[in-house]
Length: 237
Image 1 (tube, rainbow, N blue to C red):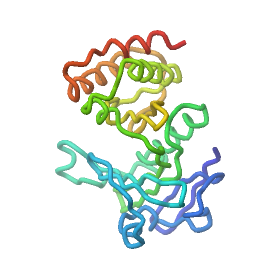
Image 2: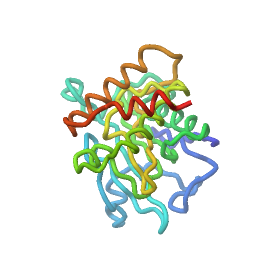
Image 3: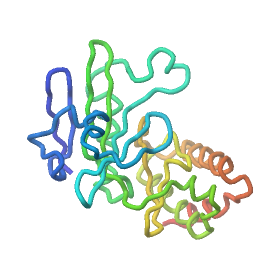
Image 4: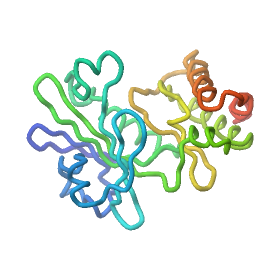
């Protein structure tokens, strides 16, 4: 994947220069594409994901949808500003870092959504940002499958194997939970939301990832054993 950057006034856009759908060829890439209002006015918003930031599902072509996710702060930081972040340079923005990381993992053949583009709007010492990725067709959050008792042992083992693949690649997913694992229409797991994640050497962070996921699993299905996930994780070569 070849990433290219362009600047329009106070906006910086990083995008996939090799594969863009007809909704936004590279010469037409504009900050308005990262605005929810732009898509709503055209009647192309076909859904919305739960959680902070309200990611939107966009119908960009008859066969492809995008996910538009604005960056939003949580916790105590949100009391200062829900969507503004401190400017420390474009390559240190959360959007640029996440898109580059996602592109790296995508190029390695790991199950992450194909990154499309991100946009950073600078306002002096602060910035706002949004990210666009290709939506995984027919995917459902593992959390929803757990709630509806639709996650069997075989699926959980696949989830464990998937996590092991990412760990072997060095990905420390700082928010590994059942909402950030999607299961597609073929029953294959995918990993999403790489904000603040990074590649690093082997360490205890791997155990921390699994412990965080275990707490999330029990939140949605308290009676479920975490053993199948661990089995899949340990048997993945």
